[in-house]
Image (cartoon, rainbow, N blue to C red; front, side, top):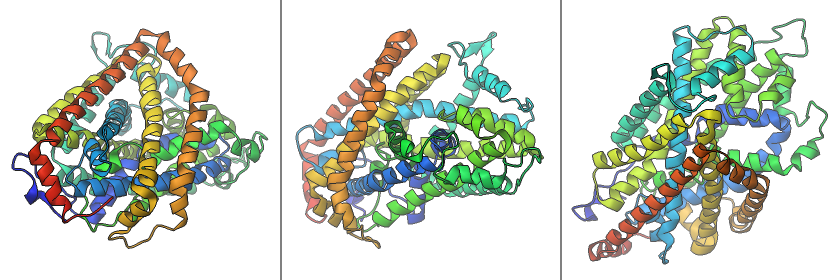
Length: 544
């Protein structure tokens, strides 16, 4: 239901998705990213292949999908009250003092993740270009590809300037940055939705081509008959650890559960604030249950079926299980160190190399676009400015952060600090708060009734108990374990170098900036004109 006619004249007209398939592909695009094709295969290989899938799918069922439904429902409910930004949404559904400030997390998280994510996106874009032009071929030695990657990203020394000129990585960063902001400037339907409608099918087609090639490799080296496709698939799917570690040991390993839960958050884009914003553009009868499940299923297909079955079996066939485990666990290891070696074994390997990194680039852009929309929506409605001004302001902030990552490149320290404190700690906090608000503040019965409005599929009744009791308990337990395992090391890392301290200070400044902006937006929303508008709207719209 479009209520744009009831907005005050000075407020921007409310955007909406052009089609149901458009919003599903856009949300799936926000979830399908580098984590599907780089991070998930590395974690699966590190934690025993099929053994890792046990905590992974348990986390998906008990944490990921429930939070996904909560965010879709809360987002749509906030949108029907006239808000498209997380601070406005939280304030509308929970009219308690200070509730809007929860939305600060939902702004900080996607904006900060974008700052380092766009750098990795630029690396993928560069590799695709190098393969296309025939400038990336160093034989069959992974170490040479590792040396090239570390030199390319500046991992040995800080700074993006070398030999009197700009490093190529910075050039591609500028290109990626411009592409993202051009698309986000075009708006929801003409920018994000239009791009995802073409990018997502192209991504899946490219992945399927590579997958078919991997699954038809057979036994390339007769001298190593054990390194074949079937055994590679077995390593991926069978709950059996090659080094002799028991499956039970993997299942009881707290670190495996931490990594599995973290991967689920990245896989589904839950805890980011992205789905809250995307769902706020839905109409009152748009299905959030089936749409959320469809977007999640698309993501899982790309992650487990495409990402896992391409990377792990291929690495197993050509390199054996030991090298996989050596580089596994690193988000970048399999993607930038190992797969380029595999392409050397294939006929027209440069073509498959280009296709692989073009796939990664598409996946990265669909995700990075989604990270910009929450802040754009907030700046537009909270500060009352137009799209051009919102894009300019956000471009300045995210550009500063991306340059910080590019210049503090030694050991990728800025990227690492941002990823831990924002991409992991804050995501856990926001996801926990969201499910508690749905289950306890709104009330799980009332929340599910809102979710079922216009739904073609009913959420199973057991999720009433999962959302209210199981999901919060698991989230808190995993988060406490996560802090116990990691926080001391990262505090020491922040104190260890000036670059790490500068990055931590930058994150703190972002928190202060968005807190002040939310406060200013709250004052604006609380004017008499706004209050009268929301009261009039509330007489004919219902929700939690």
